Structures are given as C-alpha cells and as structure tokens.
Image 1 (cartoon, helix red, strand yellow):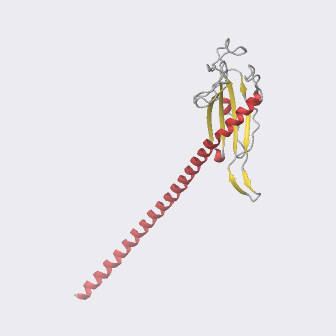
Image 2: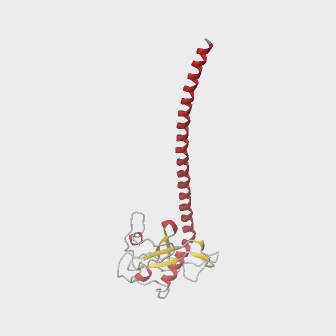
Image 3: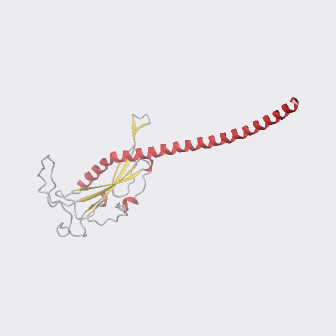
Length: 217
C-alpha cells in the first residue's frame, strides 16, 4: 500500500514541476515586456527633457536676436525714424501689410527654411543673425549651442505709400519727448514716433523653433 502511494506522489510532483515551469516562463516574458516598456519610457522622458532644455535655451538667448534686429533696423533710420518705404534686406515692412497665420506669426517667417545645422545662416533674404556653435579651444568639445535668429519688422501704419504718420493713422507714441525721463531715470518715448512690431524666429538645436514679438520705437 505504501508502494502505490509513493508512485502517485511521484507522478503528482512531476506534474506540479511542469506547471511551475510554464508559470515561470510566463513571468519571464511579462518581465521582459515590462523592461522594454520601461526603457522606452526612459528614452522618451530623456528626449522630452532635452527638447524642453533646448526651448529654455532659446528663451534665454532671444534677447540676442532682438538686439541684432534693432541694430539692423538702426542702419536705415533717418532722423531717428524708420522710412515709409520697405527694405527687405533688414526684413522691414513700412506698413502693417504682412500676412499673419492664426497664431499671429508672419507667414513669411513660418515658411522660412529650417537651418541645415544649428547656428548656420540660411540667407533667406530678410533680417538674419547666426550665432554659431562654440567649440572650446579647437578640442572639439562643444560649450554652447548654435542659433539662427530671423525677423521681420512692420511699421504699424495701415495705409501703403502714405509717408505722413498722421495721415496714415499710424500707431504713435504719445510721450512728452525723447529727452524726458521718468522718476527712475528711464527715457520716455518721443512724441510722434511710430511703433514698430518685431517678430523674431529662433531656431536652435534639435530643430527647436520659437517665435517672439516685441514693440519698439
């Protein structure tokens, strides 16, 4: 009787070992799939983090592009005023005639070509300033990213070919004079100066593109 019981026990043990093997294989497959998913999730998070970092860098350097735009526009000023005629070489439109998309970005900037590499100028025909990639001492170690700044500026006057700002219903500053300062020592805008809207496109690393707008006189 004891001999028969031993045979039954042995057969049952073998059956249990087979089930455990199947369960172990299923668990291994599940763990492998979970590991692959985790790796892909980490890669995705790193990519998002890198893109956000590129965006933050673009925000940080946007002022460089605005300064380049202001400097370029300064070369065509006459008696402190921008002319009543277009000048495409610096991206200047003498009237508010640019076509804008639904976001309020000039279509000409949206359609501008993507730089072939960070910091490489595109010569697209308007205002442009390229800040190339900086390499430390010829060692090949990159110390900062490269950027391309492109802009258009439109004089906020609705009617074409009307040179007189008053006749053209231009949006003008109503300050008390260019030599007057406020209580903090800041210069007030000169009365009668026409507002200029500068729209800046910044292209950085990883094809990160941002748009900025500012009003200047």
